[in-house]
Image (cartoon, rainbow, N blue to C red; front, side):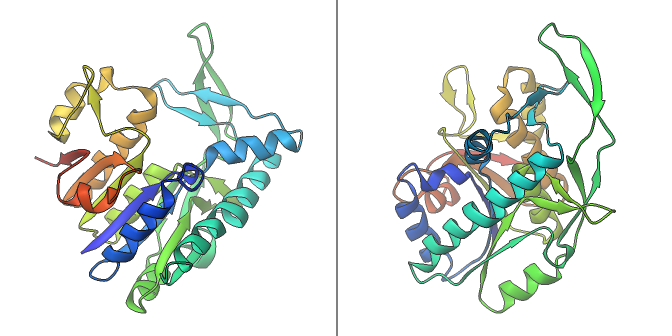
Length: 269
């Protein structure tokens, strides 16, 4: 199987990486794996240390995102690609996994449109328009490099930075990046690792839910999980067989999710 896995950059700090890496090592023996990582918390920490205050905005749909101006995209790319990506590469290499870290800039793997404007909701609930900065939306996946790496037995680790029409780096959402890559490469499964057990509704983790059912309860899903659910639906619409949302912690977090022992299974039914 081809698995696309999205993990948060903070997993390495939370002590869960040893079990996760061991699980990935075992899975990589019989599956092809692409890993997409996040790391927004560390970007914020380092930006603040550099004296660059970070601004976050809320979209009318309820998504929370980083406002990315020129200075912020430089810090974002530096931390995500130069620090977090390489930490993950080292963690996997230490366990004998042939990992290769890339960004969406490399071989123009991820192309995107730079948003000219953003609509956000202020603290009073009013909609406002602001310059789009260096935030983007992925429009194309050039799968050649990823396919080549997989064929040669490597495990690609992708930093979610896309290439704009003007050859500038763009901040793109990690969950959506994983979904779009999974769809473009016709992955069998998309696994979204998070810090909770799965999709929680009415205080309980839902073991299985269809895309149609998810849409019906979308208003009761928190902003943090909402992005993952939208990414899941996007992947399913592109032909991915099922999406698994599960905790990144645990003895075999990915294997157990694939066996439907933990987490939430989202299907296209």
